[in-house]
Image (cartoon, rainbow, N blue to C red; front, side, top):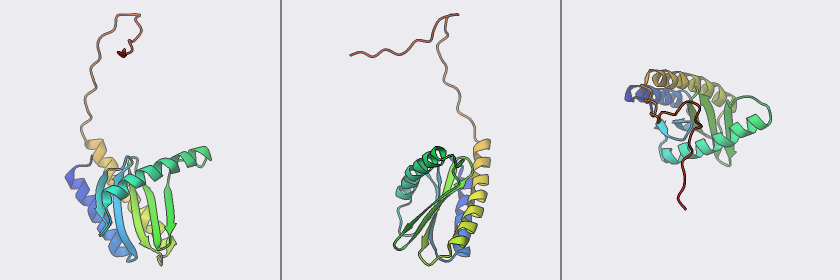
Length: 154
């Protein structure tokens, strides 16, 4: 999805974020469909967290739509021993942070939003430069003919 150079830039941003916020125990950038772009998540399976993030994102988007709250911005889950916070990162990615229970939640949001914005810029810029797939050729239609549906053999 994202070229290696941009993935390295995203990883560097995750590492800087973890250095700035000592109570972060992990940081992950993923596509909105659950593919890992970069991660710094010691002891945590990044692919599983990315897939769960995509599932939670789907529910969060439906909730914001159903309640008229606008587009998705962030999602926070608090467990007994800490937080999982997911922030929008441009149009095609999300940033998920794992934090200890003692973290200052205001600082978590401040740093998470800033990092999500920077990561979103990197990912969106990379996707804008990426070659677009060629359109799938379709069989020509006779003028005035309706498109044909594929038939199923029973």
